[in-house]
Amino acid sequence: MKVPIQASIQFEPQECWPSPMPRPGLRGQLDRFIGPGATTAEMILQFVPAVAAAIAAPAYAVTLPIEWTPLQLGLISVLGFDFIGGVLTNATAAAKRWYHRPSQGWQQHLGFVALHVLHIGLVALLFRGGDGSFFVGVSGYLLGASMLILSCPLYLQRPIALGLYVMALLGERYYFTTTPGLEWFLPLLFLKLLISHLLHETPYRPGENR
Image 1 (cartoon, one colour):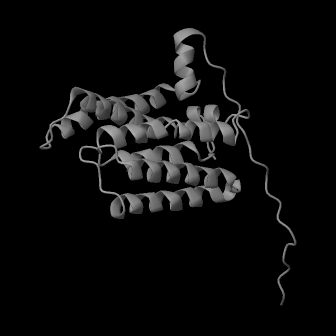
Image 2 (image 1 turned 60 degrees about the vertical axis):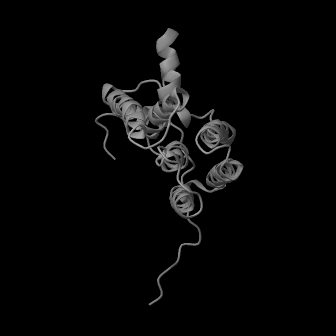
């Protein structure tokens, strides 16, 4: 018996979820960073681990037999805060609604990713002795992978992003030497941007079920 095959499958168009407007004043600046309407639980989840990372990252670095400058230790602290906080913040429902609101297209997402080329440049300059191949290789892969994810159909973005993240981890492990004191830099950089920020996911609200 032949099973009838559906000639075409209709998918729902990409959905955008409206975000509340940022509040006025200084609180509005915070809203533009983490997304308006963040719950207390979301605030705790993104800021407490980030502060802990800002303390733990330089504390770990000083245990290594390396002569650190105050600038290096300060940057390690800032990167620890930014990356742990960034991974968690970009995964919250409030941030998903804000960064994936209807006015945000591939240009805005790619622009956000491109800002992190500065992070790569600072690490190459201050921790790797001006390693140009590290800067060009990591920056090129980050931007190329981001463009590939953004150009794919929505239903393929998650598996492609995860595949590209795995390739980044393998490249960090077998192609580049790790940066002492910043062994976590590349894994968290790509996790924050390719997985946590770029993926368009349903921003469930408190008490909401599927």
